[in-house]
Length: 467
Image (cartoon, rainbow, N blue to C red; front, top):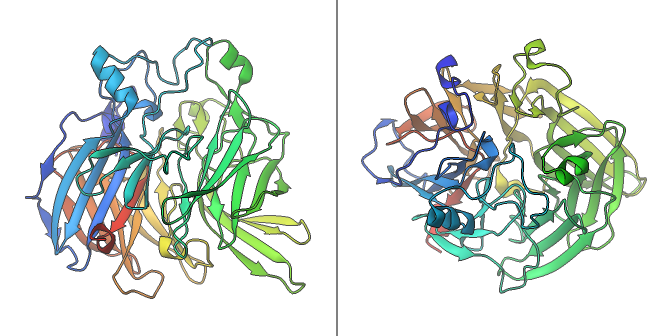
């Protein structure tokens, strides 16, 4: 794996951008693509279109989506830039106009952080939405051609940004989202868009200070907010520098609100951070109280306190320490009690599940395993089973991205389908198709070019492409 990690910055090695936007169908397949695997697997990746100003960070690059359209045992690869206003302005100027997050900036500049739409992909309402981790405009993509169709405003009703990781309810088709800010209140904004594309609920949530929120969770009736004590250093921002702070003395707060409600019930735990949830569901206890359970990947402290040489196998992203573990939280809405427990001692991140069961009690999740490297890499994929043993698929000398579950058409079992993941070695990239139940390798599809190590991915079922 060492030959993959020889970059001196986040535009080299596994992060190096690619310049060509391709369409390719004559792809080499090892094994056999399942005949009934029909749909689009797409991943968002930072991909700087122009040379950065100063030292870049992984989070800075322009959004580029890499997708494989699978149909009848055949595969077509496409990659396209998300056509953001930031990308258009940079190209018109012939250079990057704004520095990245590691570089000084003008604190008097009140314009928002550049929206690169480089982080997440969410399928909702016939659009593949490309989203930015700091919030911004939801960019509408055609799921097959990857053409940018414009900005989704839901009929002009959207009055805030949309951060990464909205949740789409498989029962109702509703999409729950948040937006958060650091410059002015309200620090947390929440919305619900129905299956027909109407913004049906908006709530400004009163929280004490701006915090760095990245994900939410949903049950069949509730949404869970994660108000955790990691935020931008306000003094550093005033001086034109971006610095993350984590306050170990401030409790973490988890807020539970009815899906279209206005009253948030808050639960406190000792300070921690979580980038990504897996799932949440609700049950009734013996006294008739509603109890919300939530799983995700928890980090005790995301900010390094020692030199990297003292723990070289724990990866870092410049100012962040990545040591997350599978965790479960339980919130009793009747008694106000909260408990939590660690479920495994292997570091994992970017967890996924079968999204057809999102918000209900589930048995499985598939978590990329963090490898012992200086920076973030995933060296395998773990299938967790809360009723049985874990199963792992290793990538050998390669590294992989986020894996997404593609259900078998007509399947009823929760793990009846495939896990799809882009895997990269020193020379190129491929899609691996794994049997989600056994984690056996079904096929490998070699891609016509290397894909930069990216962020989040989505599966668009074939029957919805035809709708």
